[in-house]
Length: 84
Image 1 (cartoon, one colour):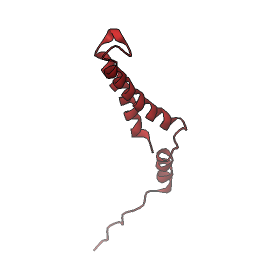
Image 2: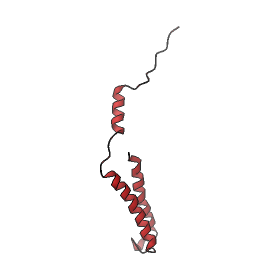
Image 3: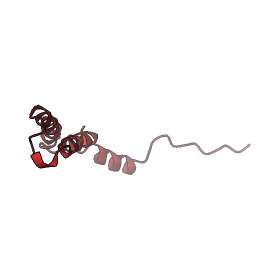
Image 4: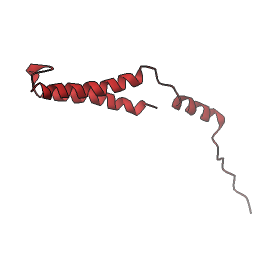
C-alpha cells in the first residue's frame, strides 16, 4: 500500500523571516505621546464646550464642537490599533 507524503509543519525559513520583520517593526518615539495627546485633547475639547456653556472653543458652530472633540479623540483611539 503506498504511503502518503508527510506534511511540513514548519514554514520555510524565507517566509518566516519576511513575516516576522513586518510584525516586529518598532514604532517611532513620537507615536505613543501623540496617540495619548489626541485622546486627551478630544476629551478636553468636549469638557471646555460643556463647562463654558457652549461658548468655547468655537462659539459660532454650536453642537459641532462635540463632533470635533470626538473626532480628535477617535483619531487617537484608531492609533491604538498600531500600538505594540
